[in-house]
Length: 116
Image (cartoon, rainbow, N blue to C red; front, side, top):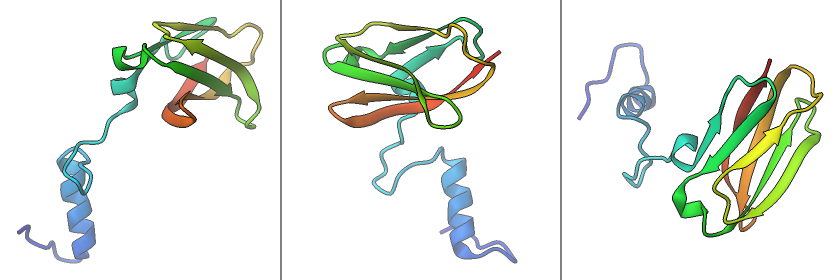
């Protein structure tokens, strides 16, 4: 049983331990990170961004959506059995963009991309 630190509520101590142990869930199964599901590079980017789903996703249909900071969709594609999706950023302005990768109507990865 962890020692409760002075001036810190027990829940804060527990959160500190969870953070130190790598963010395990209450089931004891480690959380999957975006990197476990999808490689996104280069980031920051200038003209092209590549999205590479891990092998377990290459047997299904996925959809990728990229949004600007105002929530407008600036890129959308659906692909069956993708090994790589290439987004040509074109004339988009520099800034932060957000992406979501869907499979069977569920978000399986999301994150941000910086365009320089």
